Length: 112
Length: 115
Image: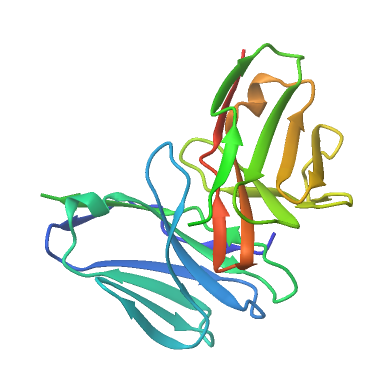
């Protein structure tokens, strides 16, 4: 499988601060990029997706994509204890199907 | 919104037996579904693509004779773990895209424990 790399963490961030999560991918032809949140024992839930270079904002979340550097990031502003979870970066490697390849995830811990 | 269900949510079976897991799209038709496996503190590993009316496509390293996939209708895919062993114990999750990879719905997962 094409690789998606993430730092496994844990990443500890004080409540109210900005959490920054990073991801790199190996397939330069990848078309779309996703950030999922997964709580222990649950299925992943989509936070954001991004297709184009640059930033995409949705509430407290901002996804950033740099295709030249094959780099995707997620910023969480005003971090809340409920944001504590594992964040999975995922990639759709091509536009031929809807397959999604996941990274190993970064465990985020928001400190109250 | 669209919902994908899985059944059972958890199952315990003895080594050597087979277990079937169902994945249903409840309010949309899914010509494609995906099966993932997740070991503790690991990521979701794509096992196979389930294609309605045709053979499943397996990812490299996944034994197709051990993990049988059937996608007999537009709303149901099944994964059968044959001759299960303790190392098959894992969290199995299915997903179904509706309009594209950005609109992909995940089932709640099935926790399989093989004793």
